[in-house]
Length: 368
Image 1 (spheres, rainbow, N blue to C red):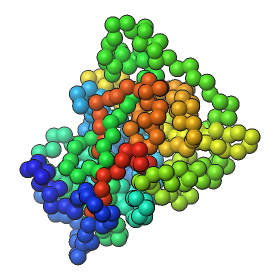
Image 2: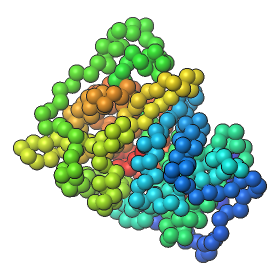
Image 3: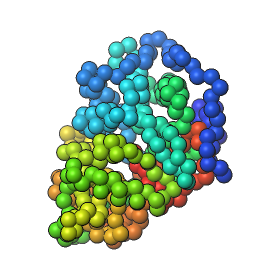
């Protein structure tokens, strides 16, 4: 590994033949990782800290390669993630500089099936450091502290995704974009301004037919949708094993956050699709937001048809754009439905779990 990855060279990470734990720690530290003054770890308090977390992410989290757009996770979106029963309070690691929140990471316990082997993992999301402190190597400290806390609870493996390329990714996927509000995307320079703007707007016009059985999922549909999800998982080498309570929490409809739709035919739920919503902020004018739907999980034998309906429903929810990764069966519809390849790439990583590379079309796992 290069010098830029000195931290990771000391960690249990490896891609190659095999499928299992790399090492079990002989000793687990009982006390928090020591920090230099004036840095301290703090227990996250939802009522008191949600606004500080929202601002930390808004001002310092994921940007596109050109730093023109930055993700904005709404307070309601963060509440959805933080209040997940699997996101234990100790897994919301807050790093303070005196009294200011300058670093954060969120872990969630989950069960993953990796190439037919089922094991407990911690998903790691929202790892963020104040941009003014990024030369102080604080991210490794947060990772070590979260690892320590997970180990104390008997969790020794982790999964995370990042736009940053590290030497141990087991999969990598480009983002694809499907314009909905094409005029707005041109005006805010998300899309390159074409010679003929009207022609481009016409090209991306959405006039797909929606089958009469497509509707938002209701609570009574959950058992059937859960069964469809479990059946869909059998087609893949990487997926999350939910129990029903977890599935209900993560898939129920939440306005402007998360949506699940079903196709009901003759009183029976035949298919479902889901997406979550995140705004992208124009960095040079943070008042301008691009409301973006991200394709989540689905179960169907009519992939292109149901994705037409997903795009249409995202439009109905006021979204300007649909984003898709090149995983699952997504390759089947990207070209036909006028998705454009983007510059962004999402890399998948395991911590303390060795496995060979997994083909994109065999991945059924997304971190919102």
